[in-house]
Image (tube, rainbow, N blue to C red):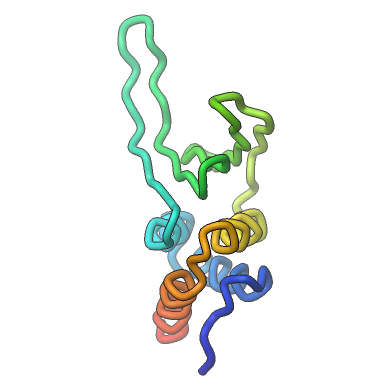
Length: 127
């Protein structure tokens, strides 16, 4: 079997869709956390005069997924939210795949990302 090309949106989307189908949104987020350049941030509870924040996953420096129901995709630049879109569960892989490809290209992390995606695909195929 060949490696997943992390610069091919269709191949990346295929792995993400399979992860969601077999393991749900949590499985997709677990896979994302294993990719270079992805940062998982724990949520904070609300306090007196301060709203709580949901957990989030940053895919690169300016793409954030808020782990709410439904998941929300935000484009954030210098702390300013430029776009805020709810992601229907069936579209999560399609939304994430171009972000993963762009991050891989920007970081030059082709080999590490290919390794993580290929390992995930092989594990998912075995299930």
